[in-house]
Length: 88
Image (spheres, rainbow, N blue to C red):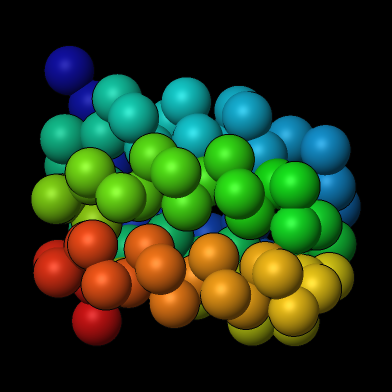
């Protein structure tokens, strides 16, 4: 079993990989910090990731700054944070 608690993908080009990131988070039982800043993630990627985070209770810190979110993506962030009470 994996015991990774921190993943740092900052400055990676992950546009189009929201479904894979979502898959990682859906299986997560140890990851507490995930840095996805400046990864060129789109609103579509964010929608996939945030859908999973609605029910994830392990992740405590998500760094998602400097990505290509639209206003709709920002609204999605707010909605996810209302449901996910473990993220700080």
